[in-house]
Amino acid sequence: MSLKKQAIDGVIWSFAQKFSVQLINFGVQIVLARLLLPEAFGLIAMLRIFIDVGQMLMDGGMTSSLIRTKKPDHLDYSTVFVTNFLVSILVYGLVYLGAPYVADFYGQEVLKNILRVYALAFVISSFIAVHIARLTKEMDFKTQMKLQMPSVIVGGIVGVLTAYLGYGVWSLVWLNLTQTTVYTIQCWTMLKWKPTFSFDKTRFKFHFTFGYKMTLASFIDTAYVNIYNVVVGKFFSPTLVGYFNQAETMRKFPVEQLSAVMQKVTYPLFANLEGDIALKNAYRTTMKLVFFAVVPMMMILIVGGKELFVFLFGEKWLPAVPFFQVLAFISITAPLSAYNLNILKVKGRSDMVLIVEFIKKSIGFIAVFTSVYFGMDVLIYTYFVVGHTFMFINMIFSGRYIKYYIWDQLKDLVGIYIIGIICLTVTYFFHQQLVLWTDSAFLILVAIALLYSILYLILIYLFEKQTIQLLKKVIQR
Image 1: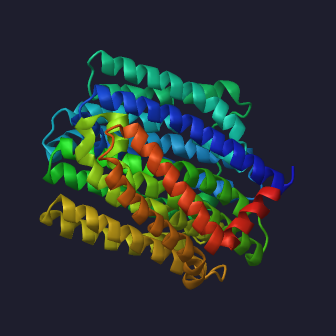
Image 2 (image 1 turned 30 degrees about the vertical axis):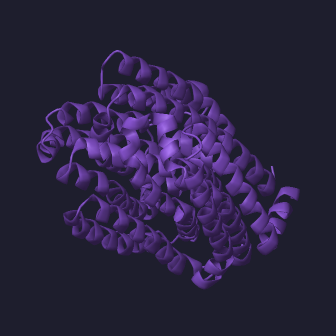
């Protein structure tokens, strides 16, 4: 199959996989948000950093090395499999022993047992990390979707049922463990490839040399992404963590579906392209089209934030709306940061990925620990500023490798962003008048979405014809 055909199939099936899986997960979360108190989500969010770090340490960045390796063989895959499994056992042991100290840190005794059970997920997932890497390497997202769907459905049923029966925060734990377990069973029973306990020191050294830098970079990023939940949980309350986490989840959900699909496809796609010119053109096209789609998506949700939360979760979640409206602006630029880092990965510059992440997250950590003493509102606005700063740093470091410098990138995007802000302003004033006529959250959301979309497309057609032409060209191809 040609690279072009692989890319097209990859986008279609990766989008289908992400959309279907996340749509089911999202529906389950809506039901759970109505059955559970915000505190339950807050308690899990406070532990997220330990689960994510454990997952990241288990993998060690070695599956990324497998994807970028031109022709990995069975020994490569088995070496990484053995490494992942052994490290997952070691990391789980550390988490198990450290659980009481985590509970003491937050002053929440219930967290000890929750963490010990929840952390089993990354041990279970170590059995299939290489299987998923193989499928991603082959851009076989169709099979991934077929394997993942049953786990999402079964896990969702378990989560909702246990929440209805009054298990509280534990329903979120059993949901996650069920999904991971069923997914693992699916991969081992349905996929032909099976690992062996073969281990080669040379192959390990090759993948580890690339992977450990990616792991350190991922560790810094994971720590920063979760530090807000840790800080809010330490200085405020589990309920406020729940509001913040729900706002984060909602602002990430629309963009992450598109961004995750494109990043998952573009990494192996970019890795197979020859020459900086081809890489630059592919990246520029991807970036412009994603930005074109993301801007209206998030701007509409910003205007209708209150109605969105009331319609989906109920009025008890209204305190999360101001957080969501500010943080949603970060989601507009998030894909740009992700794609820029893919350039460094493709170039084999995992050392630069580490350096970039260290610079960004150093700024981020200083901002967090400085702003938390001034209250939650200052913390949120600091997060907003830091998120945009990260985008500029990624553009500066990555753009020079393909001679697509930061000013060139901004010049390609600024017109779309200005149009988005104009439409946001008009729609906001329309929204202010609309709420005087109806209190139906659904009708308000539909009305502002229609107005924004029509106005946005008209202005894009008038002032950004190059983007329209690019879209037509991609569709025709």
